[in-house]
Amino acid sequence: MVPQLAPPKIPEGERVDFDDIHRKRMEKDLVELHTLIDVHFEQRKKDEEELIALKDRIEHRRSERAEIQRVRAEKEKDRQNRIAEERHRKEEEEAKRKADDEAKKKKVLSGMGANFGGFLAKAETRKGKRLTGREIKKKTLADRRQPLGIDSMREDALKQRAQDMWNRIYQLESEKFDYMEHMKHQKYEIIVLLNRIQHAQKFKKGHGKGKVGGRWK
Image (cartoon, rainbow, N blue to C red; front, top):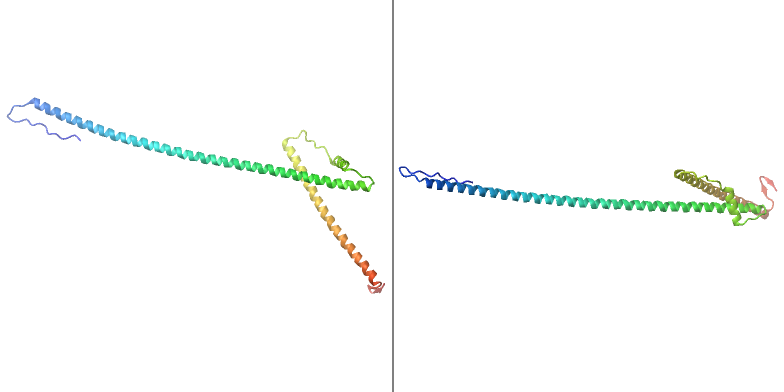
């Protein structure tokens, strides 16, 4: 604020001192100049303080954004690691499943070969000719082996052929199981029938002739 200075009064009837008037005017101008300078520097100080506060807020906001981005990056990294671990786990499970399937297929083929080899051995024995295990295996493979014709097949066709073979093996095993169950049932019925016959024969021998159906025998 510029102080309000009263203008110098010119005394009436006396001699005017222009030097004094000039001096007082100069003093007034100097006071106003100092006041303006003080106001300028005060405003400049406030502006600098506001600028420093603005820079601090900008830096604080930049630090917050950097921290948020760091946290997001860590979360994304953890998510990618979990995805990679889950994919690796599924790949291991898939590889284990395929290995188990291959082992089952080999076991089924081995069982089929052994059963069929035993059947051939019995058949040859009935004919009076007994084959060794190696000869039975060779004969079995020679009778059942068919050309696959897979040299010119693509990968998807090979997969389909393998799936067809697996389906066929599964069907043969199912038929084998049904056949064995049927054989067990027939064997049980034969045993029951033989027991009844033996019981009837023992009863007949123990009691001799008896009245059956209204007649004496």
